[in-house]
Image (cartoon, rainbow, N blue to C red; front, side, top):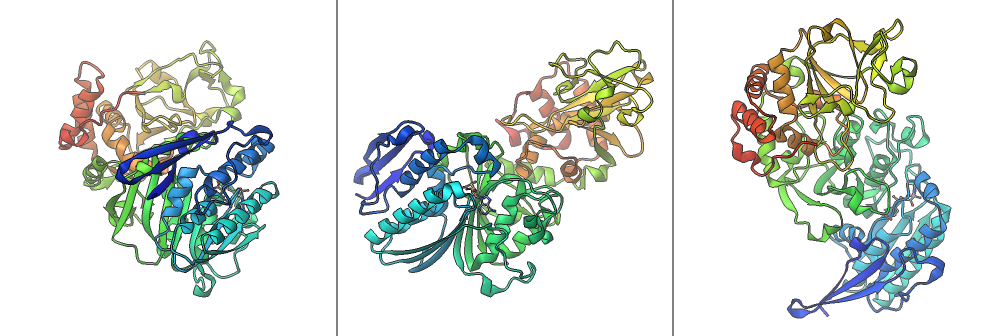
Length: 570
Ligand SMILES: C[S@@+](CC[C@H](N)C(=O)[O-])C[C@H]1O[C@@H](n2cnc3c(N)ncnc32)[C@H](O)[C@@H]1O
């Protein structure tokens, strides 16, 4: 039998499907169905420990994980950020280790039920014998430790049956706090010993003064997230040439909060492969984790390799993902100093990057300013109004008022306030009614489009009263004067264009549109923007394709660049 592949990623914990591939491409599918949560131990898959190969180690962990999930509460698991890796993803990660020598040491950090270690052992079981394998597992949840130990026992047995030797140590301790006192900027090479670190670390924001954040103060800027500290701790434990394979949120790839971490990481590690899950909902469908996530594969060596592999999947289809080699300078935006890790998911994204990055200035260089609306609803409750009838009422604009190409007010939206009482004490919450571009700060979780903008062009009558903007929207002004109507229309057309939206998505996987990121993106000059505005204002409809064509035409970008990329309004 040339190969056995397991494919249960599409089935969550509900079923395991073993696909036996025979010579000549024939496939025989064996389906082991079992109740979705395996209540009362009614397992229908017999233990695989006796199997002569590593076959089934991962399936076995998935089965045990389901029992663990049943015996614990969602609330308890959520409190410790315990989300389990699906089988297909675990195997994909284990397969990323480039070399498994006769002596092989690996670490599973935040091991949970041990699916990543099991995936690695499953792989090793099929290798020529004998291999001497050392695995260290870190896990702090007492409730999952018994499950983890069962996994280890089974891995040991299966590897022994295949002529290998496994030595395993479960460290019931905090992976981040185990860091020895060595300076991060001068890690001793003696401390690095692991060939590979595999991890699906917890994702949780930490207080800046938490012991974990203090242990890695050098890389913390703004609010730290424990997953980045896990990655840093792993880097220290790798030997030179060792490999990190981590599934994490994509958020570390861009943004100010992770900038110090990226600089630190990329000074020590060479990115080899980034796999992007465009839909986390699909990948972790049993959990509530919804951010875009990535698998980062990096090698401990200070010089970045010339190329980085990029692959993309929408979730469970990870096995079919075809990696493409990209020049490292395309992926890592070094000149900006922010070391942003850009992810061109489609080949047309490269052409979009080239076109946008040909603009010589940034948003801020063009004299534009982006700010967040000053009204934080829960802090301003005494000024919020359900109707605009109050004599002191001024329009309150929020995310639902910002439609592509149109600011719509008032909008009946549940119990949302529509106006603000502009009385003494609320002066800091209102702005002069003048020309603005409004930009949503958040897109819906699974909405593809990130940038949605509308014009705010008050009439003379409207200019007599101020306007209130809620903090879920950003607004754009000129630093020295009021924006002209043409500039507003041009900016709205540009923000709503597939061109800029796709460029933004290459930079950021976040549903949030941060003002800091907008400030630094390349931007055409204001004269070109005003020309776009004039063209768009002359159009008789709000047809998205026509507006896109006008944007590209004025900017001298061939229409073919976005062929098939026109996106409909949200
Ligand atoms: C996202 S889960 C992943 C579990 C498992 N590796 C998998 O892929 O299915 C992260 C695990 O890390 C554990 N954990 C959380 N904080 C930890 C820490 N500081 N040190 C070690 N383990 C931790 C949690 O209990 C949880 O089991």
